[in-house]
Image (cartoon, rainbow, N blue to C red; front, side, top):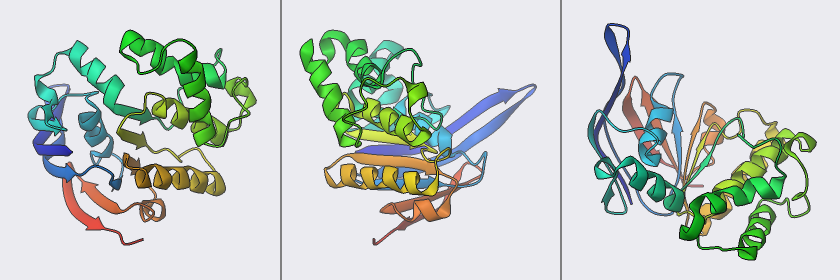
Length: 230
């Protein structure tokens, strides 16, 4: 489903360029639950940015479900992302003046007529997404009225709102306590069992062992790719 072939990424740094990725070859099949681990600056988040189309490779190709992202215009890429990828950030990125339900339904409104859900259906779908993460009764709460763990679960519900086949998360438990982090990963595992492709970045090797597969990254290279039997 996801194929990175010879992917390189460099960024200008004054008179030089920083090489974030140095020729990544990676395949992830539909329904896999994958952890990407490595030290800070190793290229973990850059790989996520390639998969989501947030950034483009300097060299190489990114192909997802037969579609080569490099060939898409910015508008076409934004439409593709809205339909195919849900993104969960470490710092939640919830809009503070909107309720939990309004935050969750926002992606459906942003997709406009391209959304699977229209009118009142969006409200119903938003409630369903909150129920999936155990927050069915928190739809009318503002982010400031929620704990960090609850905010992260709202962010998960928002990422799921358009029912994307791929879910990516960058340090999704970085600001959570151990118990809440475990709850988040239990939801990830359930979603993977239902057929969604889950890819997350973490610094925590213990959390990574909860995935089906661990990809180790260092200095812009994949140095180890191991299956987990759990």
